[in-house]
Each structure stands twice: as C-alpha cells, then as structure tokens.
View 1 (cartoon, rainbow, N blue to C red):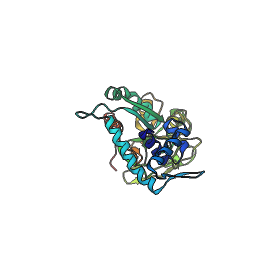
View 2 (cartoon, helix red, strand yellow):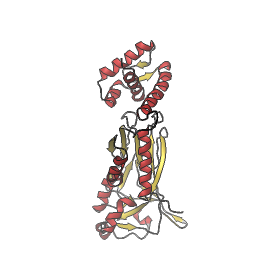
View 3 (spheres, rainbow, N blue to C red):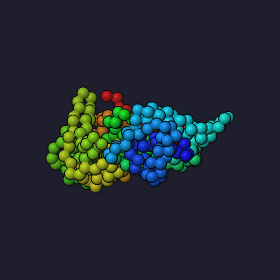
View 4 (cartoon, rainbow, N blue to C red):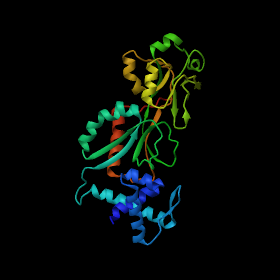
Length: 306
C-alpha cells in the first residue's frame, strides 16, 4: 500500500463526502479509491468512514485522523518545494477559478510574466462567474468580485474595482440620455440584468453629495457572465453596470458612453478565497501575491470618497 496515496484518497473522500467525487478529482478509478481507504483502515485497525447509499461521513476516529492527515499532506507538499539550504521554485498543479472578464482582459495577458517567475507551476484555470464548490471540484482557490456570501471560506481581499454605468450610443438614441439615475427605473429605459450567486442583482445605489438613489431597473435580458453583460450593453439592450477597466477601451472607441459621471458607486471588492482546511502551499502563496501585485500594477483598486 502506498501510504501517501491512501491518505490522499481518504482526505478527498472526507472532503467530498463521496468515493465517486474523490475518484474524479484524483483522476483515478472509484475502485482504486475504495481499495486505498480499505487498506488504510486495515493497517490502522480502525473504521475511518461511515458509508451509506447517499453519503460518506468520517467516524469520530476518522475525523481525528483526517485533521492529522491534512497536516501531513501539507508538510509533504512543502517538503517537495524546499531543500535543506534553499527554497526551490514552487511547482505543481494549481486549480483556480476566475471571472471571465478578469481572466480575458487582466490575468491571462499577464501570464507570461507569471511563468517567467514560476515556470514549474501548472495552472488549471476555470473561467466563469458561476458558483464553484471548491471542495467537490477540488479547486485550490477562486478569484471573485462582490461581497462573498460563503462565510465558510477563507478570503483575502486583493483590491477594489471602480465601477460605472454605461450605455451604447444606439441605446441612447432610442431611449434618450437619462439625466438622473432614477430615470433608469422607469420606461423607456432598461438595464442589463446580472445574476449573481444569490440571485438577480438589478439593484444598485449611486450617490452624489447628500443624495443617493436606489436603481431597480427593468430588464429584457439577464446574464450570469461579465463578458455576456458587456456584449448585451454593446448591442444596445440596456444600460450596464461595469467595472471601469472593462469599459475603458469601448469608451475610447465611442462604443459606450459613461452616464452619471458626477455620481459615485461603491467599488466592487475583489477576493481570493480558498477552503479553510486547504493548505496554503508555496504555489498558492506565490499566485495570490502575484495577483495582488498585478492589481496594484494595473491600478485597478480604487475607492471614491463618500
């Protein structure tokens, strides 16, 4: 029995609550996972897991053993990236999930610089705005905009994105240029709806001096992806709430017009989040630090004074 593989299989079963999901994330067969866990239990002479048709849970002994196992696995991971005299370049596979516009416009174009520093890290990057189950999908970390609703995750704030309201000239020609944010809540205006993880986010609150307005606009289209929201705005389907970095080049080309420039919107916080039981390995640490440095370099963090 390979004790490392057996401990890794056991930890993944505990984290996912399933032999099948553990096998998928480890990219081995379910039979192999089952055999590894059985061999581990036989060696320890302790029942580690309670198995039912619906769920697999750790026994009391299994839960205590799991806490030790994840520390051992973390130490082994660190050992692979260090020598007695010096720390070698972080290496290995890192699974991350990032918003699609941030990946397309900021992160991926800068990756040559990342690989110049860390050539031995393999990034498996999910690009989406969907809710990702970090445990079930074996994801090391996610980059997300907006307030995090999953309080079980460990989150590090990496910056803030300034945001604004924009519209295509074709839309403004038909609906007219709104002179006040409150105009967006009534005909003939529409907004492009964006579906966050907790539901539809059509509500935002611009403020100006002592006045603030809650905008609950009508929408003809709702999307759950930032690139799709931008495309809908460019197509004249409604006004859009966008991070300024997404709109900048389109404003320069005359494809989008900024609205309510004397008004302010609270910036969108950006986070990197990871599971509380997931070891922050050397490769994850350098990725987080690199993303923060990239945010600062691009001057994406901004918070207006209220």
